Length: 422
Ligand code: GAF
Image 1: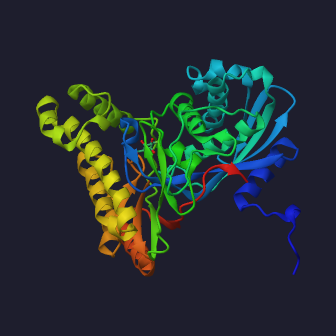
Image 2: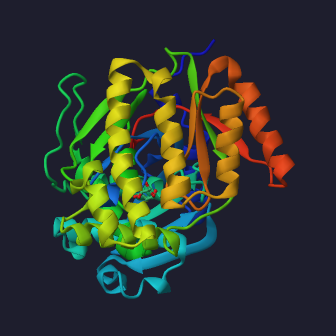
Image 3: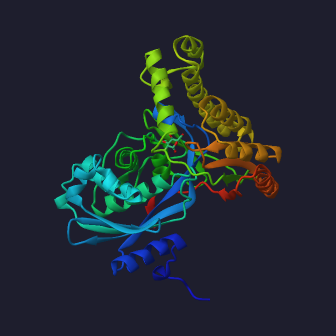
């Protein structure tokens, strides 16, 4: 047996892939790799941009960024998503975003957008920092509702903030006294980095999303979810205890791709804003279930149902957190099922493949199941007793075949740590 010293430190295959791509593309060695995870949202959908509550967790699938400084003021990015190397001057970024973003290939808007937003947020003169070469490799499924975009944003943000020694500041993040959780991990302010990632997604990519995915990717903890108040950005770590309860969290990726830069996501957001305006409140966070009868008199049926989803979903997040704390994960099944029904019937963001996945999982004995993420495709999650994983997997696969859908991809996810240097 040989003893592995520090020099023999083994990286994950995706980190090695990022290093190899770097060397092949730029003809030099990177100084290091940084990575950030995708996420699953346990509950709390389309509540983040309504100043509400969410309960996501980071997953073991990560995007890795290999980086080396360059001696000029340029940024070059290359990835396993796309063949082209994309290059820009750091001092040109402010002229590209947001107005001229269409000149940049779509995937590259994420890292270049983060570079732009990080320089802007910190008031850093682009001439004062080194240029960088970056190579990305990822095992976060793209278009599956697992936040591959937040993963690339998070990896870029931690890599650049450390390389440029930028410590952006943001409102303080509440610590959970019981768990010792805090958003201020190490020298980087993770809430500020999440806000930078969100700005890149909103303005450099053009997707009008909330802050949930970036917060999950930056703040993730092993075996825990992040209970986030999207108004105050207070975040608390909530122990999940899936393994201790004999449970696994299955992702059923329908293979139906979605994009939040187009169509339905923005329409849902606009309906929420109409509902808040009709009630004269800043955001749907300020609306309670008791307000719904009054709202029914003020808005059309579609707007009413969109609002009802958000208002009841906020309550379900609070109920899920309380149930996890008092009874453990086996007791949250009904809340997951109610969340799915609300998204299917009131918010209308499910698709037949997601409904089929949820129904098949529940019929085969899952504790609970729901679609996760923004909807219009992507993945469902199912909370399943360890001994029923095979039965649920087979049932979902069979249901997809019977409906004439392409086979789903089904795998277990583990609540994992957030963005970091590898
Ligand atoms: C997407 C968005 F990016 C999030 O901000 C959130 O709104 C989610 O859809 C729906 O809950 O993941």
